[in-house]
Structures are given as structure tokens and as C-alpha cells.
Figure 1 (cartoon, helix red, strand yellow):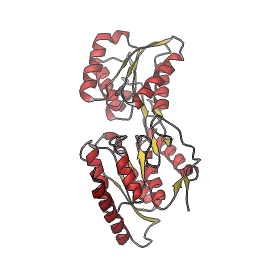
Figure 2: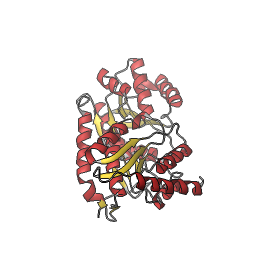
Figure 3: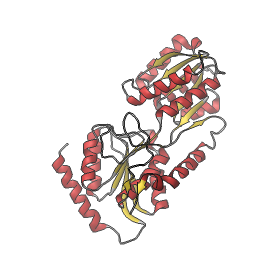
Length: 344
């Protein structure tokens, strides 16, 4: 990255931001952006979250801005462009957990705060905090729900993401813990890695089912694409014997729940991440600071982690789960400022 060029762009952005700010037109005159690492359906709720946060908190502007591709340099260029347009802070999903940190440091040097949403930057980082799913807890609760759906006995397969990903490691540990708690009534037949990719997921999951479907009592999928592929494969087989718990609320997975091919899926809270993230970035841009004694969770990536919440979607709540997530988000937002920030 060309640091000099970025510093110049940020300096221009600050000058423009001051020159063009409306005079007390809103509760704040800040322009905030929510920036994912690239296009992905997971982040779609950020657009509505941005609009709602702008309205509810009286922020001058909250925009959802997506890089054209999943490339760190494109995310960096977008940060530069938005800073030059006077944006005062960012909520972002890191295009690279380590590589993004030099950009975040430049933002901080120019008094532009950034928070990580949906995924964390690797410490040490100038990112104020990370708000995302507690992946260990989500995978643990998902496996417990799977075991219940299986009647407490049988063999489980874990359809996992990249095995080198620290989040995958946590999910593997969580699944193993839930299985171990059955004292042998449930066994872990296999952990099938690298399935959160369309081509590899299709190949590996369908090959597994072709070879071993009669031995499998249940599958826990801890990746978005893994869940979609598994739900599609079970529907194509016409098999309701194998129980599946997935993750996220893709339409194919939700339709699988309605049709009886999927037992449930672990909802994440991307809407809440975007909504509370925009609220927090605006406060940080107004001069608030993160409390030294804030009740953060420590993870392998960061010592400043906030769990954005998770819940199981099943046939019992498939029509109401979005309301449940909004309620969870409201409760987290209501106490957020007092818990995590010190404000002038």
C-alpha cells in the first residue's frame, strides 16, 4: 500500500468533511460507511441496517458500500475514496484479517475510527473492537440441537470450512465437545473440511453421501455454502432420515426446513452487526472512546470481541426469527454505550 498517497487522500477527506458539514442539521453530521470485504449474501442485511441506523440515531448519512471483488486492495481503495469524500468512520468486514491493519492504522492517524463487523482483524490492530458471531458457541449449540433431532444417538459428520482458518478450529472443538458430552451415544464419524466453497463443497459433500449415507445420522454444517450444498443434496436424495443443522438463513436452507429436509439452522445477526456498528462508529467519531474495562471476550484473533448473538431457526420459529433477532439487537444496542464506551 502507498502510505503517502493514502495519507494525502485522508487529509483531503477530512478537509472536505469539515467544509461541507451541515450546521446542526442532525444529532450528528457524520457520514458513516459499512464496508464488507466483497460481495456476499451474508452482508445483504447491512443495507437495511444502515438506513435504519441513520434514521433511528439521527446520523447525517450511513451508506452500504461494497468492493467489486473480494480483494484487499479493492477494499483499501474504497476506504481511500470514501475518506476523500469526508466519511468520518467505518464498520467493515476485513478483506484480510492481517492485511487490513495498515489501512486501519492510517485511518486512526487521521481520527477516522473503524470497527470490525462479522469478522475480526487480527491483534495487534487499531480497530476499536470486533462485533461478530461467537463461532464456538454457535457451533456448540448447533451440534446440541442436531443431537436432539437425532434422538440422542447415531453418527455425526461435521461439514467444516477451511481447516487452516482459526474460526474453523474453534468450530471443530465445539462440535467435538458437544459429541463428547453424549458419553459415546453419539460419535463423530468424520470432519469434512474445505466445504465452504461451491465447487469443493458440491464435490465433497455429494461424494460423502454417495459412499456413506447409510452410516450418517446427522450433519452439522458450519459454513454458509456448506449448508446450502448439504440442504440441496439431501433434497435431491429425498432423504429425511439424515438430520441437518446448518448456518445462516439462505432461502434454500429455509425451504429445506419447511420441506422437512433440514432440522434447523443457526442464525447469525448481520443486521445487528451493521445497525449497532453504525451507531458505535458515529459515537466514536463524536469523541467517545472504548472503555479500558469494557466486558469484551478474548478470542484467538482479538481481545476486544463482542458477541452479536445467535439463535436456532427451526420449524417452530421460521416465521418469527427475524423479529427475535431484532429484539436481540435492540437489547444489545440499549446497553452498548454504557457497557463499552466513555463519552464526553
